Amino acid sequence: MTAPTVAFVCVQNAGRSQMATAFAKQETADRDLDVNVVTGGTRPADHVHENVVETMYDVGFDLSDRTPQEVTFEEISESDYVITMGCSADDVCPAGWGGENRDWGLDDPHGQDAETTAEIRDEIQRRVAAFFDELEAEQ
Image (cartoon, rainbow, N blue to C red; front, side, top):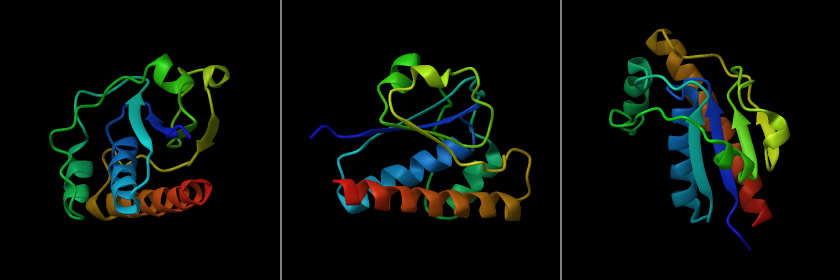
């Protein structure tokens, strides 16, 4: 069985998708699952938002060295799951997506205060854990 690929996609790849990717990689390791995790944005920012770096550091993740990247057509078309964060990812046509698409409808943490950013982070962590419960049940 081929390892499934999960893509976390957002416009800037500087907040929600970076948090989701960090939590997904942790879930993969903690559960000893064979899952490929990719992330990218349709119009990536220059850096991960500072409030996101700070709130993730509070729960043990250092995102300070992460650089937002552009998601490629190949990454999307080869993914079994494409999870958008609630932002407009219209630049990436769903018709070319190779697998199931889910939109999580999350608020953007960019420019939010620490409490709001932490609430968004915690919701992302819950959703990633629930998603990995599904993946684990399938494997």
